[in-house]
Length: 117
Image 1 (cartoon, helix red, strand yellow):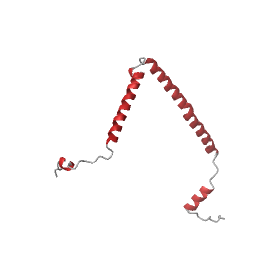
Image 2 (spheres, one colour):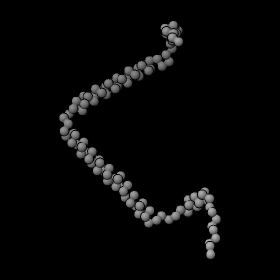
Image 3 (cartoon, rainbow, N blue to C red):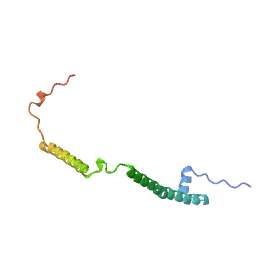
Image 4 (cartoon, rainbow, N blue to C red):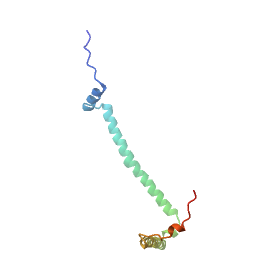
């Protein structure tokens, strides 16, 4: 004897039921999520730590092999740079504060050449 046919659900109803009552995760899904968390932890922490150790070692080697006290690593070079920055800032400030609302002279239109069309 045949079983009575179940009422066909629309795709929308099936999706709503699936969202409200999701199936329990299988054993494979649970093991996969644990393995994924372990792998992510390894990639984030252990691998980065090793990378930073190698970069620190490369930086120490570079400092050891570079000539001592290069010209740009002196106090005089730093003071010269700071002096140049201060002078540039003062010049810019003097330029902008000299005439905040500059009014052009009356004959400024006569000084400009007409634009050829």
